Length: 376
Ligand code: MN
Ligand code: FE
Image 1 (cartoon, rainbow, N blue to C red):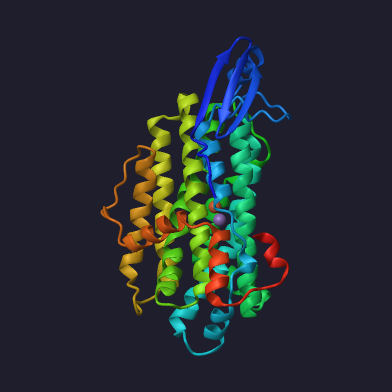
Image 2: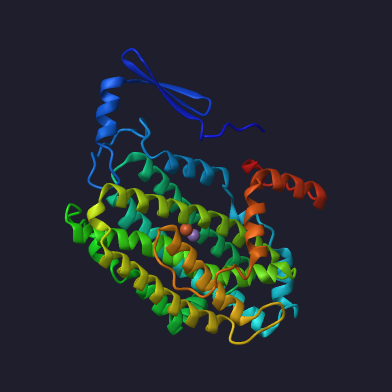
């Protein structure tokens, strides 16, 4: 399978045209119209058009991330849960390990929905450049895949959906985490005037909150717990899904960071010392809530898992998100306590979902003649 990198984007003027080369495709654009469209492209408050105006491309990185997201496509319901079911219904897991899985299902069932809804109504709706909207829409589709993966888990393990929902609605650390992220969302969904600095800052803060605080910091400790189990060969179907989800999240964080950086570049009025401090404070509050959540998920150390490592991991992630925006991180944790996790994510980047499945079918000796094969 050959692929041409989307990074190969060139634009050349030829007479009245601009010739765009994107990967192995060529587009001829009218030079005058092209200039006009390019001039109207802004992260917010730009020209809005219903037509397909990803070209001329202004925000290259967004299109590259879109392509990367697409290359990482996966389908939850074809992931084998047989071994997970045996372990879940037998005595392979300790009470502490079962609790981590339950927290994973309980928290992410709500969280994936919150992210999907917020990216759609708060972020995508307010963006005006086509290639940014385009990448953002792909993210929303991935949040739907993540929600679907939770349904696949719940359905496979025969977990009572209502019971799970009721149980986790009442856990204060989860409720506080979710309320903290969503409390400023309602007014942003109403379509606020984004020419005003204060409103631009509200939008920027929401973007930061969803992609850097929630997805970039508050998702990672529980991901790490579930992948620690996976490392011990426990609940490997779930582990596999969480690996794919985590790989997706790294693109969502990168996209959010890119949009935020471009927004600030185009709107320097946003980036005041007071606003920078507001973002740092917001992250710090998110870290405190997350630590409370970690203590609920892992009240004491268990096999292969030390609570203090996960608390450090929260600070480490918060620190790297702040640093990526040039914001000061007061974290005392300077190195990643879970280097193996980065390796897992990195290796997964090399892995093509569909090709892997073919190999797994062959080595597993079972060829499935179901509609699942249509996906290959
Ligand atoms: Mn997600
Ligand atoms: Fe996400």
